[in-house]
Length: 438
Image (tube, rainbow, N blue to C red; front, side, top):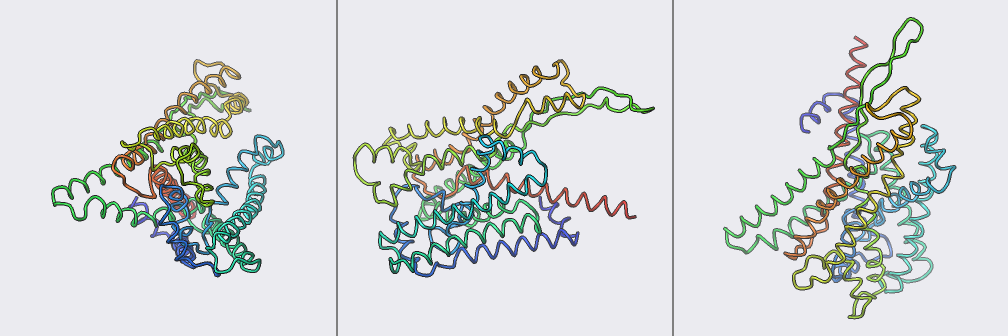
């Protein structure tokens, strides 16, 4: 990794891209600290501090703390992520969108434009709901039409600016703009979380206990990171043979290749889907002040909250973790089914004269790929489950409260690996260009 960056800085164009990306990320961090006019940031910080459980921990992590501070970037890239997921799901239901998705670069540009518009609409809806909800609770300086409109406009504009910065990083930076913004937000919260772990398990303890606790924390983080790296890079290679053809006086084809099927086919999407679905009722109930009490509804909300899982004193709420695991596996199969089409791959192979050794072209090939895919999805979902559950288990057993967890580590590792691969590919392209020019 360090060698890749060192070599990248030797190339002027790539060096400029890295510096541009760095400057854009600084702008985001500055915007995450600027308070929204008409909002008392300290009031919000105090209110969030009084909220038990982890209702807002994931939101805090992916917004880099800007939501807790109610800054101009409070919504951050959450509307963009939501709109991207919605558009992907709609490609199944709307044939026109499916055609655009298959229409090459022009189709992708049109889908990107639709995603932008939907992002602004979602940001407007979320900003309005937050302004009115928090205004009624007395968290705004003044709850009147003028102040509400101003807050909504600033929150919507802030989300649009973050989206614009992400796209500029993709175009003029190192690529993966939105993903890099998400990663820098998560990383910005890690020092505070590590400090919280230090204060809880190391500070004030005897040297022996402090060193042991620090070693266990570091070991858990390292094991999780290594496991994620293995999970992200693991692939199942399906051999493909292309038959020989005679074109004129030349013989073409006959080469062997393979189809790389990633074990973690859906990436971090199943974790985000499952976590968002379970935390949504908790967040709404917390904002409305309906999360207290001893009734059935309150117990259900406690079961949905990850902070109550794996608690030895209240094991009943760990049922929520079982539901979470089932949702994670379900979404892994669902998301892969809309992004990977075995029949389409089989047909393309057949048209190109390719076949899997021992498998007949056409439907038998599609069935073969489907069987392997179902097996791989399950393995990948189990891997995601292990990564997601390890931090939750230790948080529950040892009452550690941190905003980052398995989901954050998967996002960080995946984006870092993909970004380094893009930098390496850009370096390789420039190397070949220089070689040809010589």
